[in-house]
Image (cartoon, rainbow, N blue to C red; front, side, top):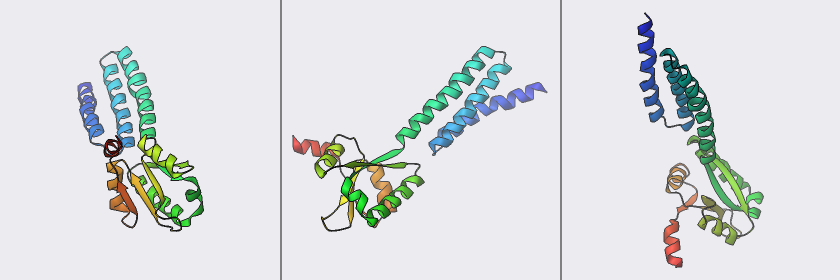
Length: 180
């Protein structure tokens, strides 16, 4: 009777590993990775390797999940550069930002606004890859905004979801070649 439990629990290892690999949402993958580590620790304990089981539980599950969680959280953000005076004055701008947040949230991303004093600082930040994109007025007295991104995937996500907004993708390597 104990052999059946052993086979079932051992069968959970490849199953949870496969589920981890096919996950689209990184947070779901972290949870399943935690389950994988717990099952592995249980299998090690059942075979009498209590020291390996303890190591797997502490390092392979708890520490790894914590570090992966921090890494996923910090990498799932779009940094959008904005000129400070434009970002605080317009209701249309706030509506556009809310639309961006909604779209990015569907893809498990966060939006972080980074304010700059003038256009020169804004474009330098984009070229230095400090930000992923810029959003600014198309004309001085116009309330339409143009977004530029250097990340192709962000361009595809935003363009497909927000057809009313003006968005452009630029390749920074092309810009650097023209400058030299």
